Image 1 (cartoon, rainbow, N blue to C red):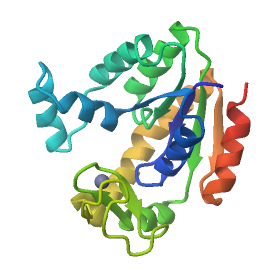
Image 2 (image 1 turned 90 degrees about the vertical axis):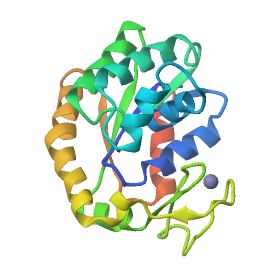
Image 3 (image 1 turned 135 degrees about the vertical axis):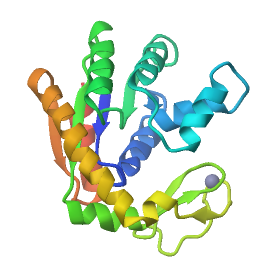
Length: 215
Ligand SMILES: [Zn+2]
């Protein structure tokens, strides 16, 4: 099993793929996704809790150095002896370099998968998104028609302010072009970057990913 780094534009359903990968290879992967890691850290009182809470609650981005440091600790602990599934950490050049270097230093050989999608489709998918108020699980009206409660914990779903706001979506797309595209070009210049067509059906893409990550 290869280490996998998924790169994507926010709101384009990459969670459908990471979820499938985790279900299929639950015993093989250690999962690193910034939101998950931060929520775990924030779930109990510890030294960085207040600091992180402040950043996360204001939807600001957590500084790259912190994410990269957390990732290094993760590689040494949870990730030891397992394949890594790294989800959405290549948004900016600083974090991209840090994550990739940390893996290379540990003699890991990750495959970076970029999910490509047209701009109009991003709007369509983000606008249909709903988030669970309790466990933060994300759903889509396009795949779960008119869903109102979470399938995992039965709490109510809501539309996040920044998902309902066209300007916010536009900003994400601009950020992607300005920050993420150069970061992925950097990856491509020195590492294995595979581009997949994110318009294909979810199951078809999943089969492609399975082929790619086989050792
Ligand atoms: Zn829930």
